[in-house]
Image 1 (cartoon, rainbow, N blue to C red):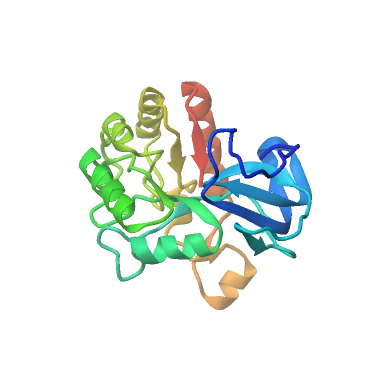
Image 2: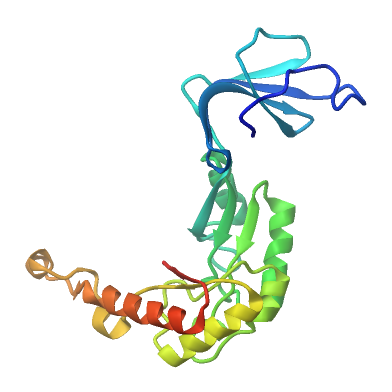
Length: 251
């Protein structure tokens, strides 16, 4: 979107008559990339955003969506979702997960690699991308695992997965316990030009806890997790990111 909007005309670029004109009317338009926040109409011609315009009367051939009381914004991006494909379709499917995303205004989903089997190879990434293109109306951007099988023992083929379409690498809910392995992952991620997403938790301190450690956990008889389990992991991860110069995202 732009700050100033072109006047709506029956001629598009002076060459041909537009086949489709849509006016999203009366909404609160938010466009962070261009610093726009205004109540205005948004014009879409032949599927492309033309710009903003002042409210106008209905015109023949122009489809109008009444957006009064609504926010009109670029599509949202979910950086951490679980689509269940493959192997966990009882919890979610590509169709159900992306339909829910579209209904909520999300047009891009970064799906985690905790599938059965995990997304730990270029073939698995390619297969998921192919299914997503055939079955969904939103962009599905898969993450590949950091380690083979999410087992935390040896690195997966990060560069190959990046070439196949992986947008980042993560073992999802399993923190990378070995500092040496995480360092190598960060170094290889530079070659693949992708960030590493780590579950920031020291597993030995967390000790399979269930809730935050404190008086209430004791009263309820639940195993607690001290805040330091996260703080120690974050400090280590930041130190390794500084050492390698790689991009790190803390989940």
